[in-house]
Length: 335
Image (tube, rainbow, N blue to C red; front, side, top):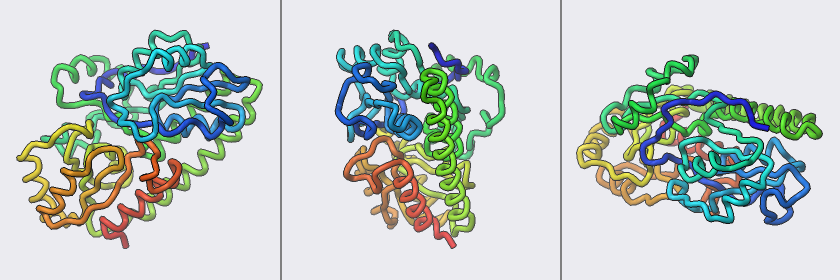
């Protein structure tokens, strides 16, 4: 039973963009492979999808992750065992273009319910961070029709500069849109437990709504609206709350910034009153700390939630997002 979804063109993200997965689901009492339990077996490709499956599925699901805790997701290669497990699952939940190996496995899999999170919201182009820092997604704003992106995929691939930003889970509003689509897919695929899935989805929607309100209130009045990050993961969050993200690297956290980009950021830090350079938990903080030292800035963690590890400032999505809010409030001089 395939889930009806709208294909988003142009998600050909240069350098297989971000996300990581956390641990095996807390909903599972063991590490049973997908398809080998009497529950609704879901394979999730990365942590945010795992979180949604667990929150919406509750006791009725057995969730397995394709990316290990602490593993850098861009480099994920699936084992034959993982690919086989996917075929035995009742559903697979992923975000197309983030992990090419997952996309390929899903395309070849016979799993009945394939849920592509990219088809449950609208991906946007946040510009080429090396040269075009002010786009803010204007070219692909919310509300445009999918057909307007019809030629985007080929165009973006050839240019190699712009890509649709996949980091939708860092915007609570967009994450809630995806959650609603996931809930409907679960209800359709496992109707015996549809009432519970709906109840759990409504509870999650309230949590995400509360998170959105906290961000709006916390970032409404600040000394500066500009923040520096290790890679361009926070475009949706910045757009949602009236901020400006300046990334050292692009959509790929492992890419290397040009000397000109570093110099540009040093100059901008002074002009915009930037106090802090944010780094992450799953990739090297060397460049971020070097920039901070040279520019006389502080450093702190702003977690793109690509995976939960013992270094994370929180044990789940909501807790880490709340920690991120506190870090932003401090760095931006919230009043």
